[in-house]
Amino acid sequence: MQRLRWDIRADVREHNTPNMPMDLLVQYAQRKGDVWRRRLQEQKDEEDRWAEARRVRGAARPAPR
Image (cartoon, rainbow, N blue to C red):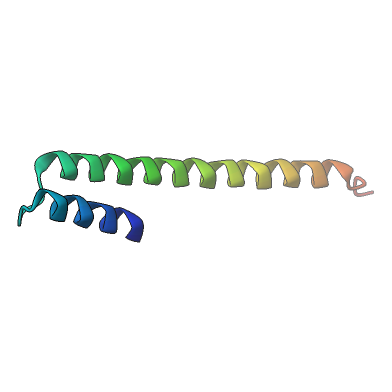
């Protein structure tokens, strides 16, 4: 996230404007949304792997007598 801030600051300085242009705000929001969605998907994938591992371990256990 820090990298995005530096990129935006560099872009704003490059354009020599005191306020952040709307296109940069939109771009920042899109990047932030992409990062959020990717992390959410990674978390879901990890939970799915854990659930599958629990099912496999449960199936490998002998049945109680």
